Structures are given as C-alpha cells and as structure tokens.
Amino acid sequence: MRNKLNIGLFGFGCVGNGLYEVLNQSNLLDATIKKIVVKNPNKARSIAKENFSYAKSDILLDNEINLVVELIDDSRAAFLIVSEALKRGKHVVTANKKMIAENYEELLNLAKANNLSLLYEASVGGSIPIIRNLEEYYNNDSLSGIQGIVNGTTNYILTQTNSGKDYETALAEAQELGFAESDPTLDVDGFDSKYKLLILIKHAFGLTLKPDDIFNYGIRNIKTQDVKYAAEKGFRIKLFSRTEKFGNHLAGFVAPHFIKEDNVAYNVNNEFNSVSVEALFSDKQLFLGKGAGAYPTASAVLSDVSALQYDYAYEYKKTNENEVLNFTDDFYLKIYIGSEFIEAIQEIPFYNIDEIFQSKAYNFQTGWVKFSELKQFNFNNLSNLFFAVLPEPFLNESDFENIAGEKLFLQVFN
Ligand SMILES: NC(=O)c1ccc[n+]([C@@H]2O[C@H](COP(=O)([O-])OP(=O)(O)OC[C@H]3O[C@@H](n4cnc5c(N)ncnc54)[C@H](OP(=O)(O)O)[C@@H]3O)[C@@H](O)[C@H]2O)c1
Image 1 (cartoon, rainbow, N blue to C red):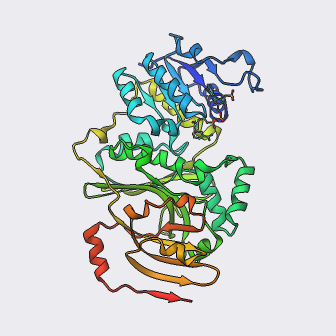
Image 2: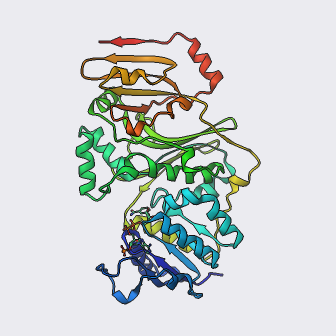
Image 3: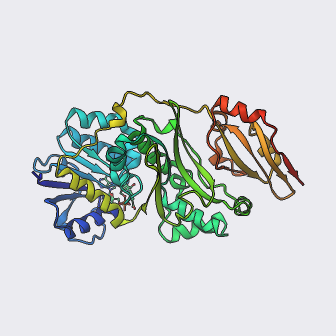
C-alpha cells in the first residue's frame, strides 16, 4: 500500500525549485506539495507568489502535512524546523549535511522516539545513491574502507590545478561558474567533505561521530610546485573523505591525496563526485555522478520521497551490529609536504624520510608521519605549507616498526 504524501516544502532555491519541477514531471508518485515556506517575501520567483508563505508554523501546524522536505541553506534554522517537524509527527527528508553532522544523535533519537523516518540521501554525493546502498546492499558484505570525492567545488578546482592553472585562478573560475561560494571556506578547507564523511561513517561502520572528531584539511594552500611534483611522479591530486578499517580500529579524515592511474577515482574530474567502496567480497566499487545542481540533487530528494511512500526508514544496521569499532588517530601514513621554507617542513615530525628536495625556490619531503601528531597542526591556516597523503596503506605501530627497521632509501638534492 502506498502512502499519500502531503508535502510541506521549506526552501525554494536551487534544490527546492528543482524538486518542484521534478515532482511535477514525475507521475509515478502520489505526493503533492501543499505549502512552500521561504524567507524573503520580496524575492522574484519562478512560480506565482500565492504558492509561498513565510511563517514556518504554516507548515508545522498543518495537520494534513505528513512530510516536511527541508531544503534551506541555514543549518541552525533547519535544525529547529526539522526537530519541530519530528516532534509534531511529520516524516522529514533533508539535504542538509551540516545540520545532520552537527545534531546527529539528537535527530536520530527524535525520529526513533516518534517512530518517524528521517531520510537524507541528497546530503552526500548529490545524485549518487550511496546512503541507501550502504544501508541495504552492503549489509552482508563486510566493508573495509571508503574514499569519497564528495565536494564538487574542490574537485573542479583541483581538476584545473592538475592541468596547470594556479589555485587562485581556478578558484576565481569556479566562483564565476557558480561552483564556489564567494566565501569558499566550507568547501576549500574540507568542512563540507567532513560533514559528508561523518554521515558515510555512520552508515558504513555504525559510529556516531561529532564534527570535531574528524580532522579536515583542504586545498587552499596548494602551490604550482606541489602540482608539478605530483605530475612528474604520475599522480593527480584529489581531496578525499577517507575512512579505513584495520582490525577493530577505524581511521577517518579529509585531506588531499596523490593518486595514481590505478585508483578508480583518477578520472573523476570537474564537478563530478565519486564514492569508492571497498568490501570483503565485492572488492572495490565506484559510484560516480553529479554531486550538486538543481536536478541531480532533487533526484535524490525525490528518491527519498518515493521511498517514504512505502514507509522506508534507515535501520542503522551497522550501529546495531555487535562489533565495537574504535575511532583512532593512532596510525602512521606516508605524506608529501612542500614549502618555500625548509624550517616550516622541519616543524613536522617525520619518523622516516624517503626523499628530500631543497632549493632556493621550493622544498619538499616525503616520508612517514604519525597521524595523531600531524592532526595537531592547523594546516588550513599554515599558508606556507601543503601536504598530501601518498598511496601507501595506513600502518599500526607494530607494522610501522617492521618497515622502520628496514634501511630506507634517502635522496637529498640541492
Ligand atoms: N545546491 C546544491 O547543488 C546542493 C547539493 C546537495 C545538497 N544541497 C543542500 O540543499 C540545501 C539547499 O541548498 P540550495 O543550494 O537549494 O540553497 P539556496 O539556493 O541558497 O536556497 C535556500 C532557500 O532556503 C530558503 N531559506 C533560508 N532560510 C530560511 C528560513 N529560515 N526559513 C525558510 N526558508 C529559508 C531561502 O529563502 P529565500 O528564497 O526567500 O531566500 C531559499 O529559498 C542546503 O542544505 C544544501 O547544503 C545543495
């Protein structure tokens, strides 16, 4: 039996407008938008003014509305709307990753206590159906890791820098094309990617983390010399939201990575997003699609609305599994670090150095660092340094001791 859905829509911007259009074009759903609440009464709209109201109570107090679709750009206001909707017995569909990441536990408790669904497929990877796949498809296949390119703005900028443009030019171009905000901090410093990683970790591994638990470093400080080094070695630079399981430990962070052609994400360019999932039996799989934009994002919202017709709710099966995973900072990883200043590089504690290059104009070093020490630095604010993770597995203490015992090749150029 399909449920009849009466929708109260908050927000009529890029995604809200997109949803309105795709819902009108889809005759498969028994769902209608009963009311639309927006903020600014003086804004020109693509549909008649009579369709809009400006008080949230117009939706929240309407007992005929059984589904709130929240598509506004203010995470605090969104939290108040969504929590009130759940308290008033309405299912919720949202695309707001920041709101979810900042209030995960409270929102899940509210949905559970009121026996309602809170769905948010559009919050990670836009049109890519990743959350429901993690919930349902991978339920019986043990997941070992995820590498996501989940921010189209930074992927667009990195595609341009990988092909020779400097960071400032690439950012200005992304802003002109509408891919980047005038204040791009949330994207370029990796915050948006972190909120999405937090949601992926919840559905893939069952841990409920807080944004402050996850280290995020973005692409703001990349220099043409770093890109040149990467290109000479056959690498492309990608900003990964990465999580990996080893034993009963889980690592997770956002940082630029140097990746080779054998990585499935090597050819994911421009504003496209991808999520590569590694599992015990299915091995590596890549989900690829548009991570933003009115119709791609609205399609994910539409899919949630459609699922609600059949009472779909996330079961958080991984959260309920017996295995207890420990989110850890205690591992080693291999990085590249570049700077105009040798002293800036020397501040970073390296346990093994593979390669050092020093010149008057630029310096770099590659080698192994301990993540718990690396994350103490506020790299987004260190404009004279850029680091990227190299394609080597993470190592725990005892594995690292084994390789540290070997005599490593050390190159020094001047
Ligand atoms: N854009 C994308 O491609 C994309 C992709 C994935 C996820 N998302 C997420 O989708 C959500 C919406 O993004 P968007 O790009 O559509 O934003 P947007 O174009 O900036 O539109 C925001 C809408 O929210 C309304 N609004 C803001 N505060 C409000 C309030 N307190 N009460 C009622 N309405 C309010 C605005 O009203 P006015 O029209 O009156 O100003 C506007 O209609 C965000 O959470 C975003 O992170 C977006």
